[in-house]
Length: 146
Image 1: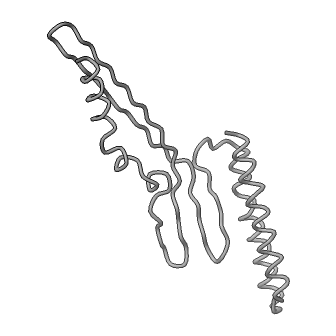
Image 2: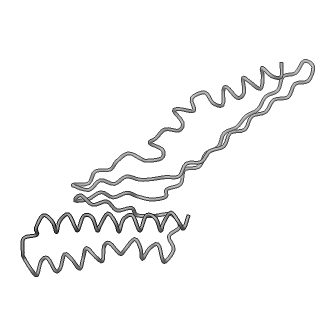
Image 3: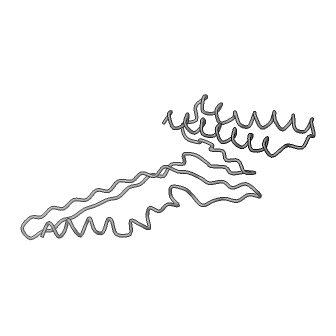
C-alpha cells in the first residue's frame, strides 16, 4: 500500500510538468521595438521531493516542488548585428567587455560621417565578420567567468 501512495505522490508531482517548464522559460518571447529584436535569456532551476510512509492501516504521502527563474542575459539583434548583454554577475571586467562594441561602433560611425564614401560590399562583409568575432570573444569570456 505504501508503494501505491508513493507512486501516486510522485505521479501527481510530475503530472503537468511539461506545462510548468517549456522552452519559453529559458528563452522568453521576443520583444520587437522597431528594427530591434530583444530576447531575454534566463536560468531555470527546480527541485522535486516525494516521500511516503505506511504503517498498518495508514498510508501517508507527501511531496513538494520548488523552482527559481533568474534573468541572466539579453540577446539584442539590430541591423544585422547581434549583441549579448550579460545582466548576471556584472563585475567591472564584464561591463567593460560589454561596452567595447559600442565604443568601436561610435568611432567607426564618426569616421563614416566625416568621410562620406560609399562602402564596398567587401568592407561591409569584413565589418560583419569582425563584429561576429568580437561577439564570440565576449561570449567566451562571459562563459569562462561562470
